Length: 551
Image (cartoon, rainbow, N blue to C red; front, side):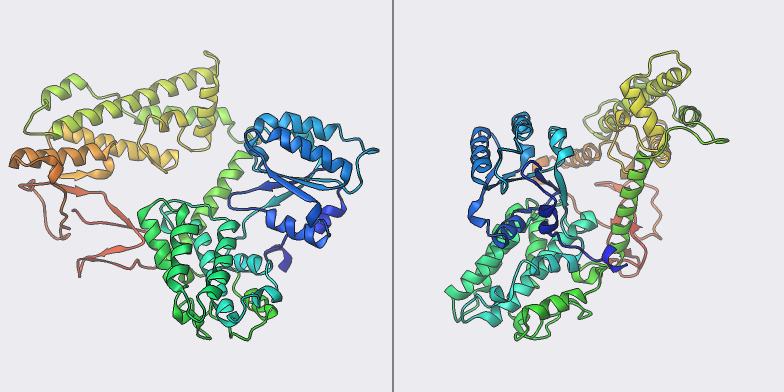
């Protein structure tokens, strides 16, 4: 039914009814959530706001928290210990305090509220005896808007004296901006280069500043001030990447502008997300939010429709990864056992992966020369690939011996065997290898292609077109190309950079360019190269990645 797909709001009254002075109430936190505001509102509702004392745990706060709890147990107050995961050394003391609560002596109004991120240091006995609540950030624009507006009231919407109309309109725009910014994270690198943890506190300070500045600057609307405080301080203060900061300010421009004060102003091209009339009541806002689509269209984020496919794939991979962790380790009747699958896979990989390159032979063919830095690059690449090949051969041989009982199955070998069975790249290989997101089968096939590229270079000389995806350390190749040009022209390497030219697909390349180099192996995500107009253009539907021509 609807209750399973519609976002649900936490009702602390139900949990409180089942609690007692000896039963702690525990909020299990997730990234970007803070239940403090909900608890303070509930305390106000229960007439306990003046009897609630809170402390954020951390270094040196233990004795103060203990004194606070002992006082509250005698006087019938509520105590709120935030961020227990930041005080792991004090958790044993907290466990003793909770265990020593005497039901006959403690005040019947006493309650202990705790918040903590998942951590192995949290006392198991408190978890077993306490009432546990998980607090997760809302998922989707609709859920985000609903959660924020449920913290408001009719009185709050009318709290900006003399500027109620502007406050209502800009508040909705701000809440839309918050929802869009938080939800862009789900698109991975398409949303932001770095996943930022924006919190409810960022939103709360922006709302209070909106109310304050509208009254201070009356009758003007201080859009520049509001834009700066939200885009560069409250939200922007968390942003460390320059392109992400540019992105977040561009998004904010679409929500903090004079047009959003107009009735019916559309926040998205389709008009699904739009501004409400200024005479709308609190109930009208809730009614409007509840009729918004449950699944967000990428248009509200300013993204291509393909972005949803990327998000859906990431969600699917995450679910499948969790299912794999719960998979039974014994084979069903008639099927191959786990050991048989691991043995087959190990033997197949050993048969495919060649022996390491002969370094002495390679250095004789490609000696270190002042005029040709690419020889040095090749030598460095071969050393790195040899380390990886040696690791693969030695670990797989050890695994096969361990499966036969000839050597002890160490923790590292057991971890590796599980990875091989699950078709994922073992950590001991990944630590010696280049960055890759491929599963084990594709990873091995890709490794063989890379080794073939290096082998051709070794046997036939410097290639006309370099496959940049085949380099273990592409930065060394880029530096080598700069060094070659700098030495040819006697120009300092610090003063030169790259210029790029995309080669038409019809042009055949048989000789190296006089300066620079040809490269292939680039992919584009979120766009494609148009061969007719020779510019980047919009992606085709359902086409997530496209090849770039030779550059």
